Length: 295
Image (cartoon, rainbow, N blue to C red):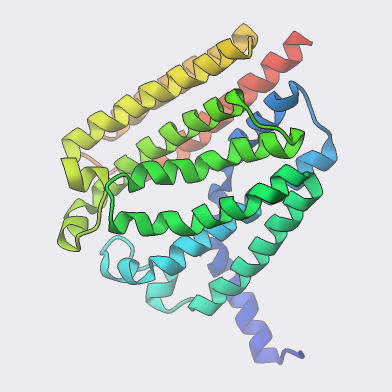
């Protein structure tokens, strides 16, 4: 097919809009935990080839998941005052503009899994199916925030499997920590939408229990996050520096509640962008240092 000049201009204009719509830069949140799983799986560096395929797999899976979320929730987004300026509700991008890259991301993810090992390839459709299913959960269960956490928690287990072709208790613990961490923040993030959710019969922890109790639940999940990360270090007999990373994570999560309170959500965006990135990066750095020092 030959593209005419107008079509080419349209594609070039929409490309940055596409990356903005799926918040491509936020891939950094899950990638460090994926790398942590990869490194812990072999207690070292598995090689550049494995690193490459795991990186491409994680980015393509997240891109697919975000596209599915934007397409599935487009009607809800058009009604919500906080999200009605997103790209599909505003007509900046069409569903087709997202579905085509979504299909490409799906194919790339499957190719990456195939290049890694048979277990990764066998489980890859299950991971993709989960990424399509979880956006629907807000329509019928308040646990949707926790289920979002498990969507991000796929990353470290998938990387572990990608590097070794095996699974066990240790990668489960790492994924559990990620699920608790991500679920906690998703609970806080959706406190912004509590009135909208209640009006349109959508479900979340905040809509079910109220903002104050939602904060209490989120704090409990954050405590469990740190304890789970520390328990992982004990199970794997990691160097003491890893536990310093866990301590840094604890301080970051405490700082999150200094920034954001039940009666003041104005800094929620700042907490999301900075603290989430710092938490995952702290654990990755601490893990690398622990492995290097032990050698």
